[in-house]
Image (cartoon, rainbow over all chains, first blue to last red; front, side):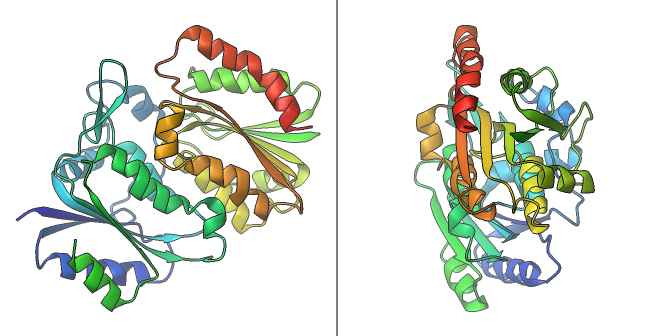
Amino acid sequence: MELALVVMAAVSDDDRERHHAAVTRRTLALSYVVETIDLVAEGASVAMSRTERLRYQTDAPIVDPLIESHAALVSRAAVLVFVFPTRWWSLPQVLQAWLERTFVPGVAFTLDERNLLRPNLSSLRAIAGITTRQRPDVIADGGDAARRVLLRTMRLNAPRRVRTEWLLDPDEAVIESKVGRL
Amino acid sequence: MRVAMVFCHPVPTSFCASVRDAVESALDRHEVRRVDLYDGADLPRSFADDDFELLSWARAVVLIYPTWWGTLPAPLMGWIEDGLEREAWAGLERVVAVTTHGSSRFVNRLSGGTGRRIVMRGLPLQMALGASGRFIALYSMDTIDDDDRQRFLDSLPDQLHRALA
């Protein structure tokens, strides 16, 4: 069976993210081998370090063993599901930093001879975001940043026909139905 | 004008640091206070009480950062959102981004122009009535040459003068 990876950034006090992640895992387990990354519990860093930035364009851009293990999962994943709260417009800092540190050259993309980006996540078929909104009325003002980053910028690393799904404050039935079709 | 300059790049010798220096020279007619989130350390610091005072003092904020994932780097976005939680942005009149992109303008449009939307609209709506944003950007910085990069630095005084007028 293919791999589905659930990445959770449960940074707020309530347990809605944990609940969403549990329903997501249960639903995905019907069709995939499911792995979960809990960024807060695993103590993921909230920023790219200077050391990491200096190594970014070398053959060994990953410094942190935790990120090394996460990158191996990302490379194999057929489905990526992100579960997180949106405070204003953007992804939680720990999740944005995780993208910066994990989706590095050689993992998410390669650079060709003209320094242009070539997608490298060849196993990836679907990307989904499941978010709870703290201020639903302002999200559009910031251009729905979290969605743009996960669905549009992420797509630049994926095969052309990757599917996307975006769930806002969903109930259990919506997660089961939408995630069940990934 | 009272301007808070906020710099976020992990590498002190980066081109982005040259951009910061050029911005600082260009602001010589303004009263400027500087924040450097990494400040030579391996990891950046987060929003502190001093930052609340800085944003209360300033009328304009100039953000200098590399665009990663089409948007602001994680620690800078976290710093901004922590300030918003405390309503530290409420009295500001102008926000200016000065940012570098590795990829082209076209690729950034495909990827959604995320950072630009936050600076041009998301943030100003949390600032003083009538506040506005300006977005000063260098694209394709990995593929252009030194002359092009220097031209961008040389253009900053005029661009900032207009942005803060």
